Amino acid sequence: MNFYFAATEVLDRLETKKGSIKGLISTVNEKDRKRTSALVIQTLKYRPVLIDLIYQANLMKEERKKLTSLNLALVLVHDLLFSHGIQAGDGPIKQAILRHKTRLHSELQKVKIKRGVRSNEELAQIGDSRAALIPRYVRINTTLWTIQEAIQHFISKGFELADVFEVSSPSKQVFAKDEHISALLLFNSEVSFQDDDAYKAGKIILQDKASCFPAVVLDPPVSPSGAVIDATAAPGNKTSHLSALMQNAGTLFAFERDRKRFSTLKTMLSNAKCQNVEPVNADFLTVNPMDIKYSKVTHILLDPSCSGSGIINRLDYLVESEQEAESVQEERLHKLASFQLMMVKHAMKFPAVHRIVYSTCSVHAIEDEHVVRAALKTEEALSRHFTLAPQSQVLPQWKRRGCPNEMDDPGHAASLVRCLPGEDATNGFFVSCFVRKTSEQEHSAYQDRKRKIDKSDEVVEIIERPKKKKKKPRVKGS
Image (cartoon, rainbow, N blue to C red):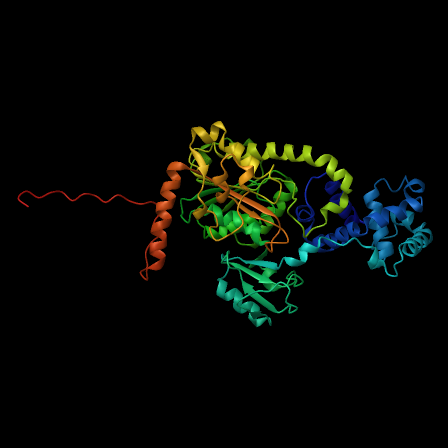
């Protein structure tokens, strides 16, 4: 019965907006995670029908002493009617459901006749059709193997590498390299990697393409003395990506305030062999920027809680009615935006920071452009000379940028990145990057020199900062 209690807790927390399905499922015991995820998703698909059946059968009223939670009743009735029965011992809660088995089946038949359907599957709510336009993205964990080794692994599994990936292709065996993220591969959306050895070993990370943008834009240092912060790290996809980009060098402080999500974070980082990460079970906003421990942090990644309005390949929206969503949306968005701005302002207070990436999985300007434009006018930004990084440093090849009419300076929109679900083969996403003016000039010079080095055939060490040439002493008589 513990399995059903875990699924009930996920549904309870979804209703109170304490996380997304993906985030909440990640807190479930690993051995039950896959099973719990399937039950939660299937229960959400049939939720309206299940609620109707439960009330028609007077289940909650007649068994109020045993069934104190509607969500518990939902998951149990789902398995009774739409699966292989309730998978639990004959305890009092299970018996409370079984006493109404005949009535529930009878009500189910009435619903099917009323709706003119023949199968149970036809009663399920269908998810967002745009989700079918998003490939299955697989990020190669370059900490454990190379991109070429990963490609050969999939070819050995029967997959075929193509130059161009077509989402509409009927073949499930074709895959391709992403054009924007070098360590990202694209597969058919129906391909599963949960049982793949590479996935179990942490060699591949299942991560949406847009979710890979923040770490790439942050461009963390590759140096033993490098210091970076991931302010909201769990479940760990972006953290492990940062660690890989840092080549496991330096120190990456990963903050997560929730105890369960913190446990999930540590598990993922261990599986991905992220040796340069220092997980911190604390709220980033409570950290003193002047603490000597964080005095050398130069890069901060902020991906705080948001509305999740850009995520289309999940079923969170099924826990609330459309009317309820509209009535609370505006107030909720403004509360989220206030919190998000607080995170940006706090990040700007760290003494050595010169690069901050702020991202959301939201499509609302209130959480995106409005937060950015407000941040640029704060005392923290003005006193420390923060501005937006130029487009050349923020995925310059990506065509969709910010909304000019949502910014005080329309020209700033070019520095922002947007992804639209159904149009960009990703979930909805937003990325911005704040830089300190003096540091931005140094970073630009460094990038120019780095590009010249990359073009050279000579083996050279990474240059962290341009060095001034010493003048040769003049010799008398010359």
